[in-house]
Length: 239
Length: 306
Image 1 (cartoon, each protein chain N blue to C red):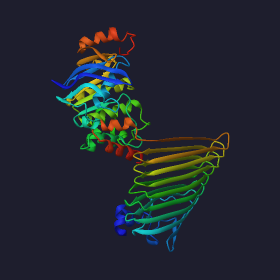
Image 2 (cartoon, chains in turn blue, red):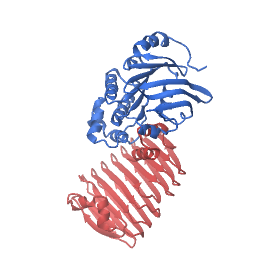
Image 3 (cartoon, rainbow over the protein chains, first blue to last red):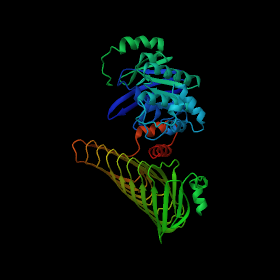
Image 4 (tube, one colour):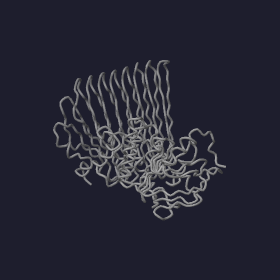
């Protein structure tokens, strides 16, 4: 059963069609990959589903649990259980990791905050009181963001380039986090152009030039993506 | 609200009872209580509209617990002038936490005029926390002239994030000698028609002297803030940095004028200033976790001023 459906979704920015008549069903409690080369429109799709500023004037519709959400704000969508992990997570001067995670899950205890950090491979003793600022590496902020998403227990989560800035050892923790999200009952969407990340999904949607050009199970999409997309020098500019 | 209530606000009941913790409590122009520890001398003289306070730390005395100064005004309308004369001896250490509490303020003026001398090899830390009422007719004028001796450290943190600012006019001038360190941080949150003015000057006159002037300001509604931070380096290997960050909301107005002046080819001073509304990605990340815009802005500002 689809938890979130995109129906004829198009988005035009600065006179250019970035998403072009996209139709996708994301299946409840499954892990999906939205794949495609740089500039294909993958991140734009995630921002549009989240309803970020500048990505709200869409054609077509977005349905979550059977109801249109296209007129809802970011907060309203989040309160329904939709969230997003950024490719490059934000930095916050002075805001502690603990406070940041508690902002995601207000009823959480401090022990649960610590537990969410342990799940992504971070030592709570070292991180809870640290500021989420430039003193943390991109990989550390990425893991903290994943911890905050685990704490939120979303119904539908999109992770934009979850392996970006992550070293090989830490990547396993990110993959464990994705597995935990699924076990928690979340529907997961991985925005990626990485084969390793794509392999963690069950279904994939291949986007090129703002259009879905192929969809299906990973076993079907993986060889297509590896053999045709990665070597392709086609520029991702929609017609 | 009387003095006992005022002290409860800052958990003063705890430090007032501790004989190992020095304190001085003043309400308007009356000294209410005082406790000293060995090597610390505090003389006071009550005036018509304030108190003269003389603090002396003997050479080689390192005071373990924070010294609490409580400057309160429990009246609705008053002027309080505090003249401070601080003399920290050689190789001494003192850390002061100053509470300025005006919980019933309707028309209050608090003037602090300080002369601080820190002798060679000493550490002086001064935290000043203000708790104001939500009435805006409060005027606060902290003024200080500070001499930081060789190998000494002067560190201050001024915080006014609870209640209305009213009018704040900070005026500090600090001079650092050889191998000294100056660190000044101001954190202020203005709202309604609050007026914030911060003027800090760090003179790095000694070789290898270091100085950082840091301001973190949030203004909303019709509040305004002006930050004039200056570092002048005149000695070799002097290092300075001016860092100002201001968040504005609504019709708030913020201005930052960092001045860096270097008068020696082997000195180096830098500055950075950022003024603007809350960063969109910071905001949208928190909103994507379910906070509304107002709550998200609060979290971001609270972090900046923490």
